[in-house]
Length: 275
Ligand code: FPP
Image (cartoon, rainbow, N blue to C red; front, side, top):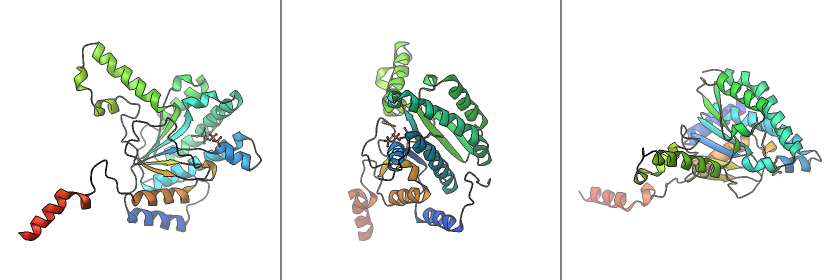
């Protein structure tokens, strides 16, 4: 296994212990999705401009990506730019694009060293050409890495994703290749931009808002939610561990009964006792 060196500082023994404790305490989520929110408010609280919040937010991206890889999380999906974000002032949009390009340029070697594969979901063709090229290069250069998939949702919205899936399926019907009666949730999932990755186990939202904000609408059906008041630039690994600890205490039933409440299993245990 390659040594992780994404952050400039060496991993402390205390952090290693925290991670070991977390791993032995329960299941580590396979897929974590994050709505990174509060960069602007964080910057305002420091008397700074919004872009400063986004810049410090990149440090959080690095720290969370590194700790997810170390913990054995297999997929990390970050809501980096929503379809709705195009409605922000053009200076902020341009600033975010520049930040994305410069961050990718700086981080791609580290992603490779650390065996992290970069992927994207969303309407990449809406991005400026230089940004698209930088993203494509980073995706290509990291495509064989296996430790963690870091998926950036860019110009993404859940409704866009579902609409595109519906269009693809409708084309199959239109061409006479698909009986509409055969359409099921598995088929819809297979036509979403996330078809190759499992649904998120845990979704984290920073900055205290209780909304999904058009993120992975279909995919989040049974994800566990963790909402924290912390603004994204302050969200670092210790709070990620909190979120995972909270996840480990959840009773995931996927709409069914938990084994101890399942009447069948209770009666079967009673029957076993009698016999
Ligand atoms: C939400 O805060 C954050 C964003 C819209 C952008 C997130 C982007 C980054 C952290 C940088 C991208 C970097 C990489 C490499 C993925 P907000 O601006 O909505 O904050 P507010 O709600 O307080 O105004």
